[in-house]
Image (cartoon, helix red, strand yellow):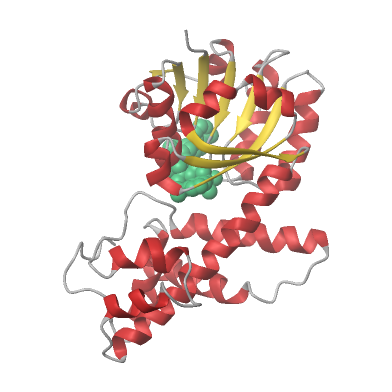
Length: 302
Ligand code: NAD
């Protein structure tokens, strides 16, 4: 028998993780302000956060940012007020570590365990149940949810105490932002230099410039496939801002953040905010005189 799992926030990531949990035999009770998302993901729909807390053994969150997470946890009728001792709440969002540490402390007073768990791999890995998860908080609580994590992840790593999971996630995502925006620039330059883009990627992937974007994103983007359904430009911008705040709190200077902040800020301003962040290459291409890496493809969804 699976467990009764509550899931709050069934968007691109949460919906796919919910589907995996349901397929692994867990009963999932979902809550999202867009009510049909629960049924679409194979969950029973709850009408409120309180209903999810009452009807679940443990509860997972996948929400846009820390201010939404704080409201869902701390507002009247939220996770804190309607949860019960012994429940484990796992926040699978990308969130501010300092906020996650505060929520952990508030929930601990009611003996509700809070794990901050960054997930990596995007929509494609969520779909296959092959995410990488980096977890902060009690190792014992993590072990209790062994079978739950097994349904959504290929690799689960306990990073340390409260905040360690979300800190690791914020550091990783910054490198993702750097490699995506820098590769977008490079590929536009290659296009304007009349180079064969497939050959350029082939050579980079066997050279020192290789990165996640050259390996996994641009071979598809040059054919007009933007890998829709993944992280949007507005969420990417949030991740970079989290990184800058995090480094400020740690007293480490960030000299590398201005490039990706400008690139994704430009994408947001040009109307790509709710498109997949891979569209940053089109935003830069607009400014470079309407350049696209591909002929045709999926077109402009703005
Ligand atoms: P999304 O916008 O598709 O999903 C967020 C969901 O939360 C939506 O369905 C929305 O209706 C719901 N929601 C908003 N306010 C709510 C509330 N008050 N109560 C309940 N539900 C509420 O975003 P996503 O792409 O699924 O990302 C979710 C989180 O995971 C973000 O923190 C993101 O940074 C992180 N993340 C995303 C990816 C990715 O590739 N998309 C990868 C790793 C981590």
